[in-house]
Image 1 (cartoon, helix red, strand yellow):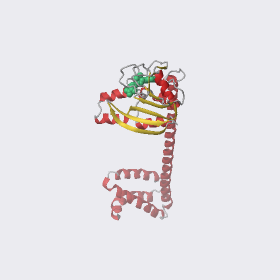
Image 2 (cartoon, rainbow, N blue to C red):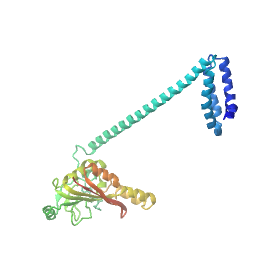
Image 3 (cartoon, rainbow, N blue to C red):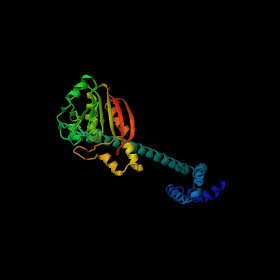
Image 4 (tube, helix red, strand yellow):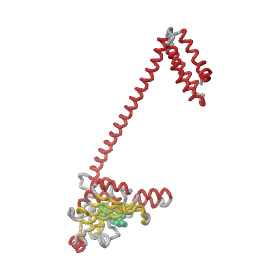
Length: 322
Ligand SMILES: C[S@@+](CC[C@H](N)C(=O)[O-])C[C@H]1O[C@@H](n2cnc3c(N)ncnc32)[C@H](O)[C@@H]1O
């Protein structure tokens, strides 16, 4: 180390020492300039930089202390030393303050953006679905439907026996133990109605089931209208069960080639075979669970995920009405 100081540092420092000795006045600026140039000269010495830096940090303060004890220049060297310390301290303070200001500004900007986004979504929702009184079917691109109970006997029997179970958006897959509800008067449909405007009283339904329906609605329609509405139809303790495409499984399957791009596209956007057969949304088990929680459903479980059903991967989620 001593050798390194002798061979590397002393030849560098000697000229400054001479300057200090002969020209005390006005040496602060030249020394600073030369310190920079020394740094520039040291920087290419990659392999030895760390060693030199260490020596620099150890010996320069010792050198300045020693010089400070020489009466002729002690005052100036002490002043130079102090200036360097002050400069470093003030730089650190400014850096800390700038960093703090930067963090605060980031937080302020992020919260402003959040607020702007919230207002934008509120305005858009009001604009599209708000006071116009449009039905949920409008969200799915269907015309407004007047509710009509087609299978009166089946419905009355289910109500009497207190096992009113609805299969919303039954389409061509009518289930025998359920009151099948669809906006289209297809064979097997027991109630022709908009799923957002059902002819059933509040807290009167034992179970609401739907398969491949909820992806037909925009997220905000689901969040603000349909989920609270369906919950309101269920009696306390009633079951809410949904089957829908499993976006998490589909993305993975598409990425690994287990699902073709065409199938991925069709399941994502809907088959688009008839008016209203368009998808507005995709869910993962996790994202739908959050929505059900927000809507107040309890005891949420996901009995099935990533199940192949034709072109699609689907999951099933169950929640209980409070
Ligand atoms: C993709 S199909 C699903 C059919 C069946 N549940 C299945 O699992 O294959 C969606 C069905 O929901 C119906 N539907 C879409 N929006 C509706 C709404 N707002 N009200 C009532 N039915 C709706 C459509 O008419 C269609 O029959």
